[in-house]
Image (tube, rainbow, N blue to C red; front, side, top):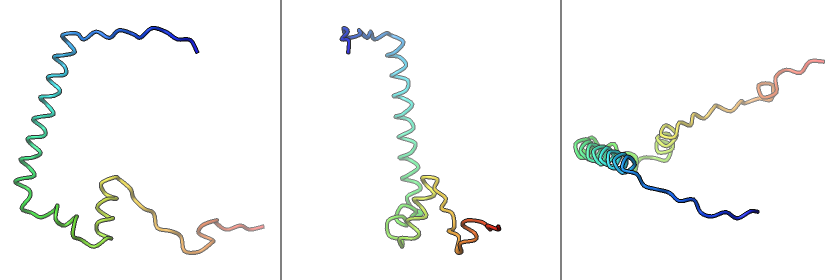
Length: 85
């Protein structure tokens, strides 16, 4: 493998301004989320996720990640179809 000299990266003023604006946006979103959590904490949704039965917890996790389990077929003909010769 050929070795080459490291590429020099230069930080420009535009890059710094973009970083600052993104950081401020993230901070405001974090503050808004904290405000919503403080106000929405009284409905008990967070406590339900921790103390519920495993099926409900599993359902919440599946909803969060977007997993929709399919029902398993009960007989072989539904799995393989009908083979007629």
